Image 1 (cartoon, helix red, strand yellow):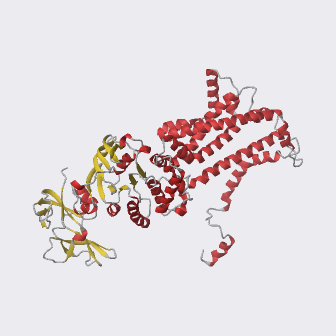
Image 2: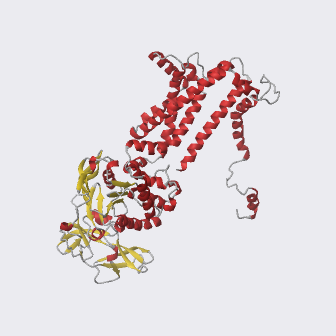
Length: 275
Length: 363
C-alpha cells in the first residue's frame, strides 16, 4: 500500500482489506443461483400483498388477506393444533434430546450408538411416517394430535441431540470434575455446571425443533386423526382447489416466524462460541 | 536432610499403589510420603504415571491396589473410600477448568457455597483470597476476559479458598508463556508459604520442579525412581534415568571399583572419580558441564577430543567435545566467550569429587 499507484485505490476503499480473487463475471453463478433460491419466495411474499384475487394480475397493495386469514375458522383451528403440537413436542424433545446427548457423549462413548441416536433426523420422513403409523396401529394408539406429538418428538429429539452433542464436544470435560472437586454432588454438578454450559446448544436445538415441527407435513399427514388437522394439512387441503392470496399470506407469516427463529438460534450459538 | 527419626508424621501416605490400563502399567507399586506444609513435585516425562497418581489422590481414578491415606487432625483417613467431593484435597486442573458462565467471584465462591457456610463468612473468605492473588479488581470479569496468568490465579484462588489439607496442581504453569511462567513460579512458592497448604505439583519440566519444590519424586514408566530434595537429585542421582533426566551432562559407560573408574572407550582410560558411595561393577560416570574444564595440551587432562560445537549464551559458553568411542560429545560450560573453535584438539579435566558414579541397572 506504499506505492503511489495503489494509494488511490486505498483512499477509494479505505476499509476494504479483503483481497478480491478471480474475475468479476465468475460471481455471476452466485447471483443466478441466489436468485433461483429466492425468486419463488419473493413472489409468494409479494402476492400476499396483492389486492387482486387471482395471481395473474396486480391490482395494488393490500393487507386484506392477512385480515381474512384470522377470520378463517379452518386456518385458526389448524394453527391452534399446530401450536399445541409444536410447543409440546419442542419441550419434550428438548428434555429427552439433551439427556440423550449427555448420555451418548459422556457415558457411552460409541460411534455406532451416537450414529443411531441421530438417525431419525436423517432417515426419509416417509419411511419414519409409515413406520410410526404401523407402530401406532400395532400398539393400538388412536390417531389424534397426541400421535402427531409423539411422532414429532421422535425426529425433533434427534435434531436436539445432534446440536447438544456438538456443544458437548466444545466444552471442557474437566469442568464437571472441577465441580466435584470443589465439593459439589453429582446432581448439583449437573444442574449448576453441565446444563448452564450446554445452554446455548440446548436453546438452539429447541428453536430448531420448534421450526421443524411447525411446518412438518408428511409425518403429521400419516399420523394425524381426521378431526384435528395441523396447519400444513389445512393448507394442503386448501391448495388442492387453487392457491388463494390468503394462503400466500399464511405462508409469508410462517416464513417470517421460521426465519426469525433460525437466525436467533444461529446468533445464540455464535455469541457463546467465544466462551 | 533431616534424618529418619526427626521426620514429621506424613500428611499423605501413598502405599504400594498400582494401576494398569489394559497392558500398560500406569502406576507400579508407588510408595510416597508427603509431609505437612511441604512443596512436593511429581516429575517425569509424559506417560510416566504422575498425572494418574494425582488424579487417584483427587478421586478421578481408582487404583487397582494399594492405599492412600491422609492425616485429618491426627486421624488417618482412607482417601480411596471417599467420593471426590468428600475428599479434603483440591485439584487445580491443567486447563484451569474455570466455569465459563460465572464471573471470577462466582467461580471462587462456588466451592464454599457447597460447604453450606454462612453468607458473610463466604464473602469474607472470598474477599481475602482475591486480595491474596491480587484479583480484587477483576471480581466481576468472566474467565474469557482474563489473561492466561490471571486465569491461573483464579484457578488457584478457587482451590485455596476451600483451605484444603492438600492442594494438587496438574502442570500449573504449562498453559503460560515463558515470561509469565517465571513470574508465576515465584508467585506459587510465595503463596504456598503464605497460605500454609501442602502443595503437590505435577510437572514434566525439571527446572520448574527444581526451582519450586522442597522434595521431588522422579517417576518413569509408572515407577518412582528417586525421592529427594533438588540438590541431592542433582548431585547424587540414584540411577542412570535420574542422572540423565535431571540437569544436563554426559554419561560415560565403564566399570567402577573402589576409588576409581575405567571408561569403556578405546584405550580404557582411568577417569578421575572419587566414588564416595562405593559403586562397583557396571556403571556410568556423569559429568556436569560446569565441572568440566577445557584446556589445550594440558598434561593433566584425562580425555582428549575434538571441539565439534561452541555456543555463546552471553554470560557463559558451552563447548561440545567429541571423544573417540562416545556417542554424544562431552559438554563443558565456562564463563565468557568461547575460547576454542570447531576442529581444535583439546584436553578435558575435572575434579574426581565432581564426577558422579551411578550403577547401571541390570536389564
